[in-house]
Length: 166
Image 1 (cartoon, rainbow, N blue to C red):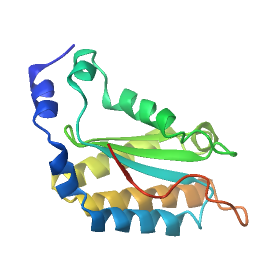
Image 2: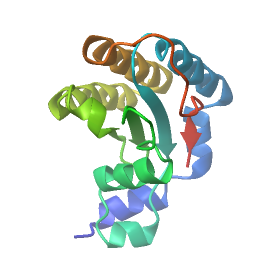
Image 3: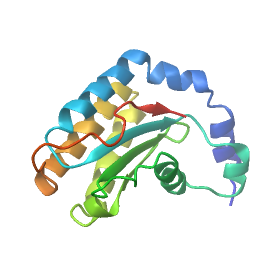
């Protein structure tokens, strides 16, 4: 069901605000953190921020989780040899955070652990600590991956490390 409050949040969440919250310097910091931590575990991390959903998506009741699953597929995060992709998805208009783990990682790290991390990130973003929240997402994901999905020797980087703004 569509709510007017949710629709207004998305209609009045301009893209320029996303760029203010995640400027080039912050995106560079996120990319560096991903590149560095991926040497220490067996996962592939993607970080995506979307400023708002389209009105028709709101009208059809698309949730942040459903949108994260769509983005997971569109960016081919699932397309790794070991099924080791992870998507950290931020829907800025709602300050919603979703983490989608591919099946290789999901077998080792249960969803409730990712959900706990999402709550922490939402708290950071609610306090307008966007850089800190993003870097927390990368480091906390890396901690879980080092514990449950350690690096097995030399490996290739199968997914780009650059954050994506939608």
